[in-house]
Length: 303
Image (cartoon, rainbow, N blue to C red; front, side, top):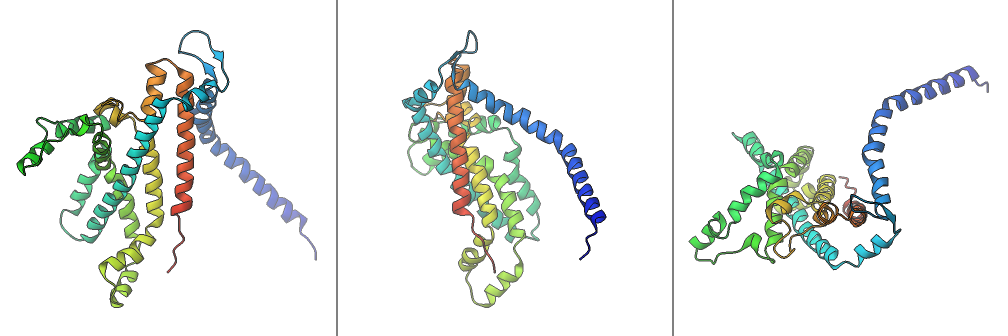
């Protein structure tokens, strides 16, 4: 069989030319990623092996900072607080956002539907600092709205953000409220992508509302649930602004998170090495959680 060498050579030339053009167009993005993410990561790795307090000489201590942080009780208390917050925030946000998305989806054609969608999304574009100050008033033990409601039905006042037991759940409620709109948009998009035929067929077969939700909605929303779970886990593990403004880590460090520990180690206690080590530990934890979530939650669904 005769081979048209000219066509092969021309094909290779075109392919190589396309590769060169692609590299030229991708170069700014690659350069941005290297400068904005790669270089700081390498610098953090370097800082994790030195003893340095923002001024003065730097002394290499190699892995001494890793050992010190790993054996620091205060670091592990921040890990416990952050994990506790994440375990409340992630499922809470998914459940609330899914419920609101389904309510909005079932109200197609109802007047004012877009207004409700806007109202639920507004907290997402509001600064977490402003959100924290607003909820500080609601949680106020003396003049707060929540305690007024409790007392109106004969229940005792609660300390909310001033209680070591209630502070993390109280912060999780604020964050769920603030993040609900973002996840709701993802779930609404997923719900709109499910063919109506599946629900019609299930209805003809006599499936109840719960059966339709459990056997159709939930499996077909799996990609969106995985996406939201991963995004919320990353957000919760990196939480900083909300507890920093609302409680400053108190009372008695009960709401101090890992990122707050990084900030204090770097800019309050002037120990850049330990701050870099803590941030590396956090990066590894987020990477592991994200991979495990994708492996465990991702399921292929076909009908």
